[in-house]
Image 1 (spheres, one colour):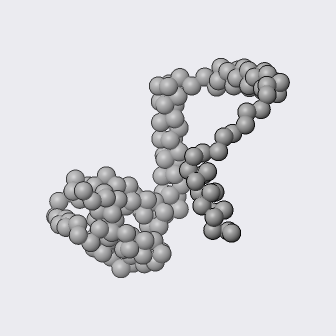
Image 2 (image 1 turned 180 degrees about the horizontal axis):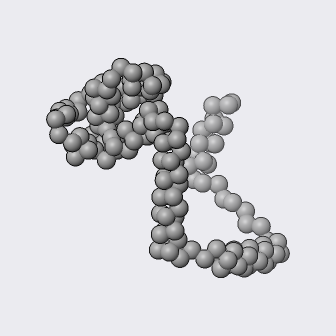
Image 3 (image 1 turned 135 degrees about the horizontal axis):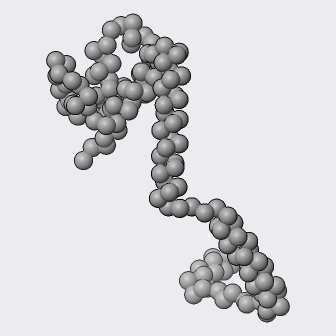
Length: 152
């Protein structure tokens, strides 16, 4: 299975090549090179421009094309409007996630403080314990023995 991002780059590259030259010139060469270099050359995509292309494109392709439109092709006023809509959508999604997972930061903060206090108590206990001597592994003994032989 091929990477859908690379397939999306192939679709976007095809759509851009069907745009007018003026629109193509608005897109930075570096961005065009990114799309061109990362497209899936084995992906065969036949778009029918006589019908609505939104129904034919991958979701990732639609996202990339909308970003191209927002960042390079639309007017400054339209860009600000789209950015505001994006920000509003992000806030709406964050609110849904907060309600879904009910993140209570205050209780988490209290738990963290309690855990830190418990760790401090156990560290105090560790200070009074004797130190354990680490034994040498059997394979290290053999390796060191062979090393001694060759040093002589």
